[in-house]
Length: 95
Image 1 (cartoon, one colour):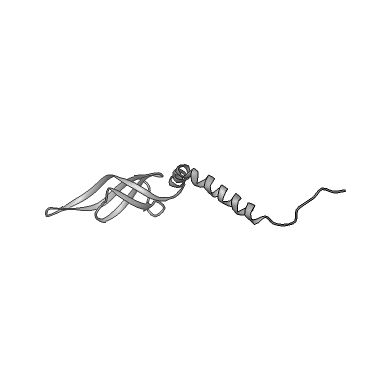
Image 2 (cartoon, helix red, strand yellow):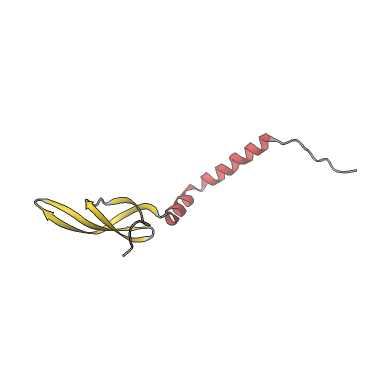
């Protein structure tokens, strides 16, 4: 005599397990956010240094140096350097 083995798929259990897993992942969102910040090459960078040229009463920014999760990024500006900027660090050389 063999043991009873159900052959019917219990969709309620599968859906409940999926939502329980999803809730467990969302519960740890700060850790996921920190990991994404460290691993992603695209992210927020903070202005550290810049060079400019004076044109009348306006400072025309020539280049900016930003600090992000992957280190320093030298960004060639087109006239302005915002204090925070979302930069893809793969596009600009590190210095």
